[in-house]
Length: 375
Image: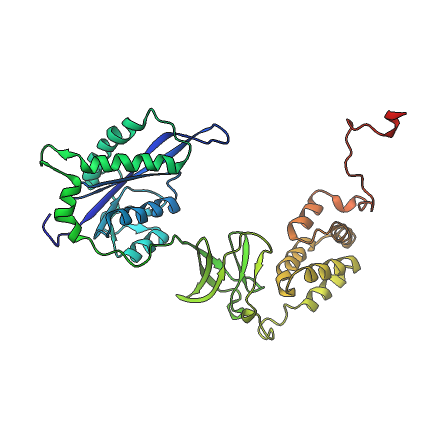
């Protein structure tokens, strides 16, 4: 390859079936990501648990770090997690995969389905990797992915140091001579995997992401937004502008609320207020009003209970008031202050059962011996 010519990397995935979970003894299957440079045939490989987007993108990050630079173009296999629609001229990439490519300034040209010539270099490299890597590791058993990757890294070094008969030199030497200078420099920081989702802002000015709720400015109620999730952060974008950023929650309360996002007065949405829900509940009966009060009191901010109250409104619509009152009383007695719990009470007819007694035995089981056994 002449200096300045475009550098390309081609990738496919192989399978490895000899990693044992030390806790269970179960054999797990891993994937092997293989990449081959276009001119030197310099090869990179690593094992991942899956072909899903986080592992796929993570393997690209490790590849670029291994090369010490970024090629102008990558030609990946037609993987569904990275490519929505394969096309030689105008491929549609997954948004997260496209953001990774943008971060590194690399072009992506996915191979077409059933067109091995689109990635002929890597097809040959894969056959060599199958015989060289899998062939030499087939009798070894690994007990972690890291242990497996250490062995693969040693095999990769041997591949790249192997003298090719036809050219009389090694892949590593050829890479240093003709491809190293053609690589673009790495960015200052590695790409951090992020997942993008579409969401609509709820009445409580929160969006749901990963099972937790995060606030946005209250003026965006009912607006559609883009949510970007990383392992540590949650960012919300509206029309391309970032409107909220939160530390990602994995445990604890479901709501992450920025006080600056809370409305000082609900001018446009004044009808959605705690008093409105209490008035509606009072029209059904005192037990339902008590349930609404308990729900709103249970949340850090009353607005965060609006969706639950609205859901109960829909559940009770057309329902006999007596049954609704009984369900509300049952929910308060159990401390079941969520939409799902009340729906379950109605679906299973628990509103007709007697409320739980104050004193309940710790355990009832026919195999337990009572005090009479010892007389």
